[in-house]
Image 1 (spheres, rainbow, N blue to C red):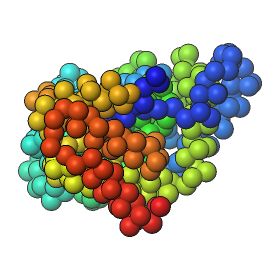
Image 2 (cartoon, helix red, strand yellow):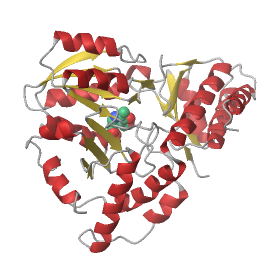
Image 3 (cartoon, protein in one colour):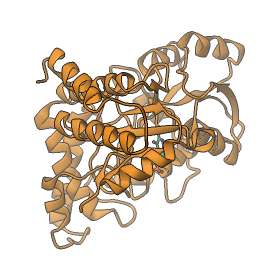
Image 4 (cartoon, helix red, strand yellow):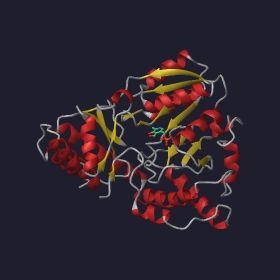
Length: 373
Ligand SMILES: Cc1ncc(COP(=O)(O)O)c(C=O)c1O
């Protein structure tokens, strides 16, 4: 049985993309690769509604691009505000500490979203902060941080808004230029619908002015000059770049407004379903990239779902055994129904007092109400 992935990375890879991945390898120092790479760059500009050339791809997972942001836009001793509301906020903090920045932590209880007014207050108390580092979608808790408002606060103060959009890019219609984001980071194995191994970092003109020379492999200056000509400083993730052309085309054919609406509808319907089954959605303001909900014996249910052919993710750290995380990244309304239906089966098999069909009914009703169906 082919297991179906509803994990917040990696996600299922569409057939069109898998076909490209199955092709023979192309050498990267060729006209063929150069042409394809420049086409990918044009498509990426359309994804983020920008004509700017200020973005680079790295052969790394998302954390590589996060490290690159720390190294290329900040120096040792630089004060930064880190919004830490979960595992990935904590990653910003660890990276900032590792590279000896001076992070001020805005610590949130897991499941809570950042308050832009609090961000403003903290920046007022720390006027020498050079940037704010945060997630748009905090994947460990399923919380959404209001990135447009956070970026506006940064813009007004003339400091860098650094957004980890690893589980938000390809879900939300993010327009970094218009929304004053200075650094926007994505990862391939999420809603960019590829295997892991490729990350992308977009940056504003203001961020460009503060570029440093501290990184070697992750040097933005080195990469940018090469990538604008369709080449890379080091061996690129060739197959992933070629496949990205296909996945970006798919997203753009659907249109990013529609892509965001699809994720929103599936997320809303899934939330309604888990609530109708008697469970609580964990985050206060949920991201539409995934649904995280609380249930007793979460690991037992999650393992049973795997036996049934559906892989979801469990909780991390203190949420282990307490929540299930179901991804909506790249998921169609029909596939979302499959996840909800099989969740009901797993719950029933594990003696939960649920009425079979109630989650499916709530899910379908929600999609009919939102006129998706
Ligand atoms: C919001 C967020 N940031 C960062 C990461 C780390 O990315 P990677 O595992 O690709 O290094 C993840 C991975 O799940 C994530 O969801």
